[in-house]
Image (cartoon, rainbow, N blue to C red; front, side, top):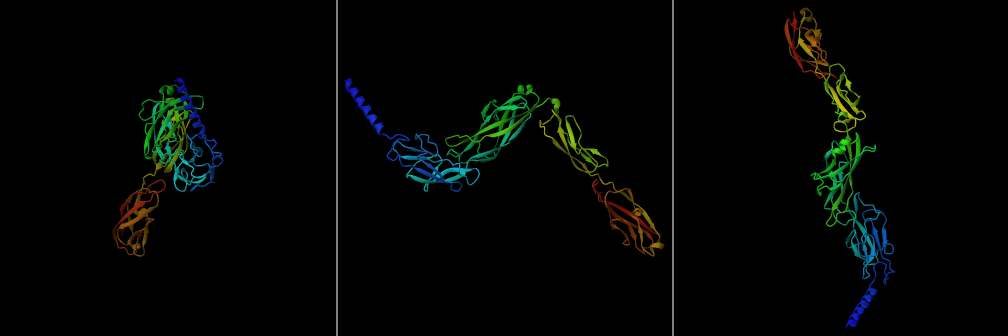
Length: 444
């Protein structure tokens, strides 16, 4: 009985050996058509560049599993297959941000990375392009002003959901991983920082931001955590480092990595005695004397225009002294704008009475200086204008000089003349309000 069983087992093993001997091997096995070279010629289509040729002699894989793009392989049945390649380096897409997402063989579109059977020894593929999934984030820099948690609001400068480069899938949304790091003052001193999402569940060296994003108008929070003890024990100085945010796309089946975004961080550690307020500019009014628009103070130096006499807008620059910092923890020089407004026009007038002898005006017209009919208690600034509002038609007033003309033949009597007077102002004075006076001319 044992002999029969052993005989059957031996017969099975012999049969299996014959089967495996007859089966074709993977890759470089000796097939009847192994001498035939298969080629795939790829053209750039709407892009540019020289055609690229793939052949089975130089691009052959030794397995049918996980065959990379742009490579041939054989099946157990001896069939030649090819994996659609990614965009060759020699190709240039028709637009920036675009890439090859599929190839057309004249009948069908074959996505990048898809395997297909070589129906002929030589085939031609033409590239088809689409805009790859991409994003941009802001800010690219941020200044931390205190220890503990600092929330940084990020916004998309761009977000394109489309084919994922070198993936064969379309991005449905994007997610981010946050990475902690170290801030250094460049003098051998450093402060570590950790990261967290907006919920502050606990800062870590690396953490998922918490949400996937598909809306380019969306904003989200990434947090930095500085241990208060590290801050308290740190040497005074300016510490800098990089907050690295890694992205990954969400496809239908895969989550391929995308490019990283970096936020350059600045942390200023200062003794309170060295923190100063930014000086403020004054709004002054012209008074004919030199006036100071920005006050000097401890911890900074003023330059450019800090005082002036004439009306106008001025700028001064405040530059910090070594070791000091502004109250917002920035250290850049500040431009302070201040101004001197024009003053009110001082024009003040009152009416007078002028006398003209009838014996003279009977023969010819007489001219009176403006000072004969109007008293200037305070002189106006700028050009003067005089406009007659009412009065005898034989009494006129010059619009620019204010001289009064009494025409020939005016009869004896007392005449009232109403005049509107205004000073136009100048570089340091505003125009005056219109002043109205009624002066008298007596002819006797």
